[in-house]
Length: 140
Image 1 (cartoon, helix red, strand yellow):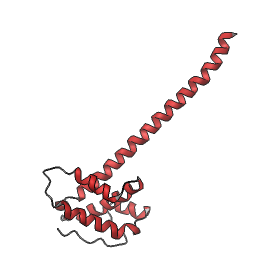
Image 2 (cartoon, rainbow, N blue to C red):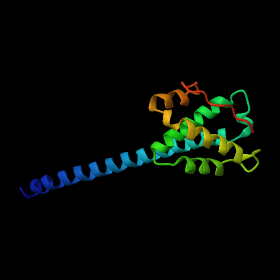
Image 3 (cartoon, rainbow, N blue to C red):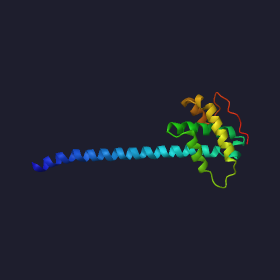
Image 4 (cartoon, rainbow, N blue to C red):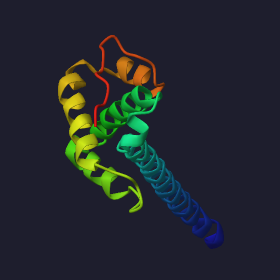
């Protein structure tokens, strides 16, 4: 009878260990997913920091996506200034710039339009579509 009593104690302990391991795996998976999302949003902002991109025919789309990325990163606890700074550091050193102009432009757009950006508007911006408000074109 002693072996069955021992097994009765081992099974709950093993189940507890398995549950803890599963929670750790889920937490790690969530951290990885969030980091990928942060990286993807920073990449959208980095793309919008290129004056070549902003002055192209697709420039407004880059701006809209960058604004959505700033909105998404803010919901992750990133300030717009931190997001723009981090995106700026990710630009290749060979990138043509006046980075300061594009950073100032995106900052101005964010300051002006962020009060109007709701989750629904952010979804529109993420798609690159025009929201209910008019974003001024980038002028280098």
